[in-house]
Amino acid sequence: MTHAPTVIPAKAGIQGVGRDKHSRMKGLLMPSDEVRRLLKVFGIAVTTLEDAVHDGAAADRVARSAADARQRLDELAALIERLEKESR
Image (tube, rainbow, N blue to C red; front, side, top):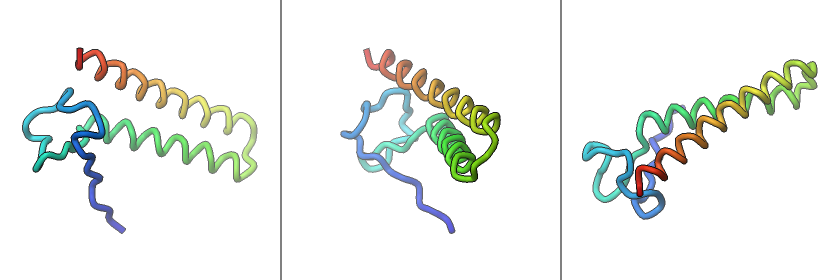
């Protein structure tokens, strides 16, 4: 099943920060490739952790999955901080 890309209204986020003219379409902002990639790998990491917990996996597998999810969350937090600094 394919999903259409999510479009975020310009008002919903930091307007124009870290974006070029090609990422704007009819007043809407498209997530950058970097944002898409980070969100994708974070989602996969959290899903992997959730699966490990629900499967009753060994503690080391759960711990590894949790560490990976935290690392991805840290990457997202760093992106948020960088975007915030760019807006100043």
